[in-house]
Image 1 (tube, rainbow, N blue to C red):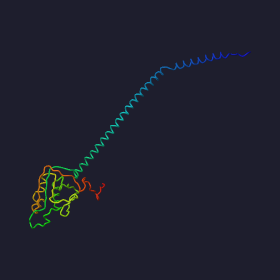
Image 2 (tube, rainbow, N blue to C red; image 1 turned 45 degrees about the vertical axis):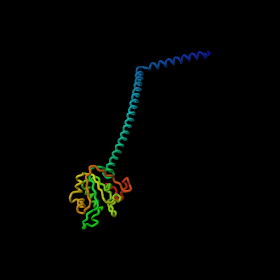
Image 3 (cartoon, helix red, strand yellow; image 1 turned 120 degrees about the vertical axis):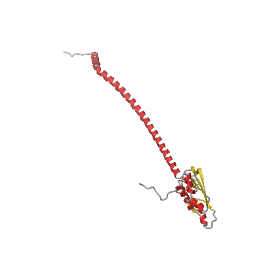
Image 4 (cartoon, rainbow, N blue to C red; image 1 turned 90 degrees about the vertical axis):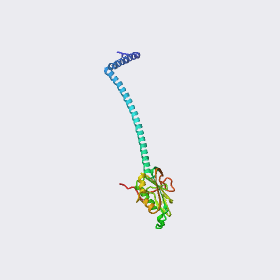
Length: 248
């Protein structure tokens, strides 16, 4: 019996039919599995995408808020820094004021002290001359009466000022000055005036016992310059050599 002889064109035809059938079943199979669950899942994915988009919007908004807060903090820190600088400068000016490194004005007295013109032969020549100790005692009396600022011949007296004899002259803040001596003091006018004019005071004795010329005048608005050392207009040339800050 002879074998069956199938022509190539017939084989191609059957192959094409087979491919069509398989494809049809495959397509139908896919359609079979697109049910309600698949539709719900698709809807859920859309919701997830929307939620993610909303979260991105929220995150971006938070980033903007964070940036604004950083700017606010930076601005606050700058303002706080400026406040600190202003406060420090204010404290420096206050220290300068209380320590005599600022020009001041106010009520007080004007005191003039000159060598004695007495003809009393019992007085020694040295007793008729105004000495550094005389000026120092007068200054202490004024300080004791509450003087807030003092100057001698327009030279501010502070805690580092020197009032010492320099021959026939007196050296004040590094500069020699001669009589008459002009002392200006700012403070309570009546208290200062009494410290100079009342009986028993040092100024009273200079005038009445030694014949020195002592004149006192009340002044209701006087000016006293800041401390200056001779040869230095800034007045800040005093250097501490021996004292140091003590740690607690």
